[in-house]
Image (cartoon, rainbow, N blue to C red; front, side):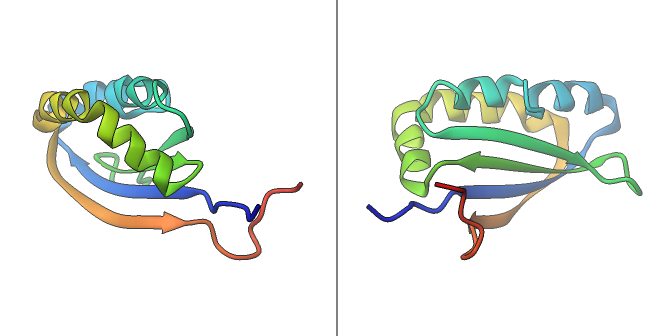
Amino acid sequence: MAHQKHYAYVWEFEVAAESLAEFIRYCGPQGEWARLFQRAEGYLGTWLLQDEANPLRFVTIDRWQSKQLHEAFLDEFLLEYNALDEACESFTIRETSLGHFIQSAGDEPPP
């Protein structure tokens, strides 16, 4: 069987200064989003990256074993996903999807 390429999606956020601590608590690798994702098969983890030059700018990278497993998560947990998204809306001034990515050729894990 051919190896399925790992899948990730990346978001950029400009965080409201007064919501910085809550944003980190919700969006970090141990946060509310990660806890929701952990309920599904195939979740590999979240990276929360803070811009050194602008501490209110962040990028999140949510990693999954495959795009199909991420889509299955959305099918199963859409109501919880939407409720959490709405709860976090006030934390940010702007959020932008930077895209959906698959692992590159030559970046295969060892057998």
